[in-house]
Structure formats: C-alpha cells, structure tokens
Length: 51
Image (cartoon, rainbow, N blue to C red; front, side, top):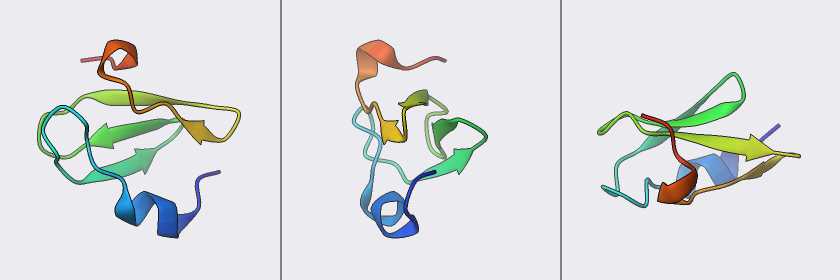
C-alpha cells in the first residue's frame, strides 16, 4: 500500500497532474495515464504507463 503522504506529493511525470491510487495503479486525474505499483513502490516512468 502507498503511504497517503507520499501519494499527496506525487505528480504525473507527463503532465504534472494530480494522481490518485485505484486498486494497484496510480492514475493521473488530468491525462489518465496509469502507472504501476510494484512491491509497494510506484513506478512513475512514462515508458511504464498505460493509457
């Protein structure tokens, strides 16, 4: 699980939009990219994101 304090400071690397955690993905509220969370660590790389 992602710590709420960490989630509050994360931003989408593609558009700098706010992100939220849904299931096992971090989703950008602005552009909709979905970033994976692996072993509790968010992988905030645009190459790893899903549309």
